[in-house]
Length: 76
Image (cartoon, rainbow, N blue to C red; front, top):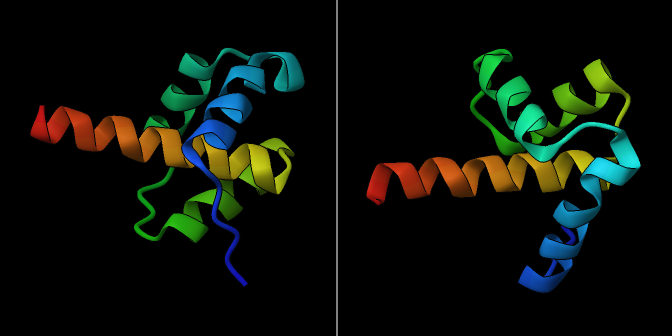
């Protein structure tokens, strides 16, 4: 079962990442960038959850934001 979040829900989760994890979003994005070269979205989410003890929602929001920013760099 896939849960789709609205853009506003995603923004709200991203805005809360520093308070809920104790690390800035930019730090998490560097962590993903420096992490293993996984291809699939769910693989990245699982790795981030396991390696850093994040909730599914936190990991999914971070990976989604990472992918959005990576795509913007490619096409921007």
